[in-house]
Image (tube, rainbow, N blue to C red):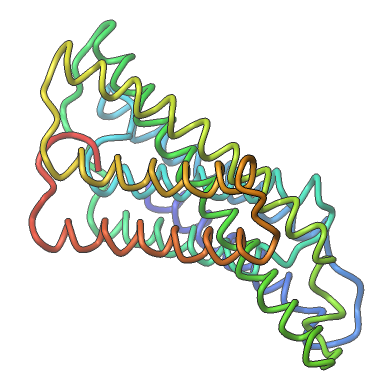
Length: 268
């Protein structure tokens, strides 16, 4: 059941990305309804898989590498779905949906076996800070995708190549707005997550060095971009570069820490 539901979700995420690419292949309007339907179906199937894992483990599927990656994938898919519904376009799906599919695939390969979580208030505290952290990272991923697309379209515009990218990407103003809102949402979620994580660490279990480094790095990245936009007067291009490079740096740091063996503890 769990494997089948995950397979359906992964297939629907890939299908959404493929459908979003159809305007680049033949002259058709953006298939917003179809892409939204596929994303929604993938999320429902993905949620059913995680619910089955939770029932079997008698706890939320958030701890351990496999469950964490699967939860991160569904958070990214939900963030993407909300963005596409409100923006009424589908090109972000081209970038973000494959990431959700890859994360869910790796999660299945690694195994969906949550680590033992504490119960009661301590368990709720732990789950809350993990969920907020994932929500923040999902929002930053959306901001990075919008930023990358902004830079590509801006380059096309400056070079006066009005091809498929220019015709089917959303307006620069829309991409900048998505980048702005997603950056602020990511910063708020990460700030709350870091506060809960810090108080949890002081109250119950001291955090490991690797978790502290990665969490602080992600929060500093989100804070720098958010403050740059709010107080530093960053224009769209600078914010797009910062969000794309910053998110890539956060991902590279995480992969480097995992490769170095810095994965003790229950978070990630």
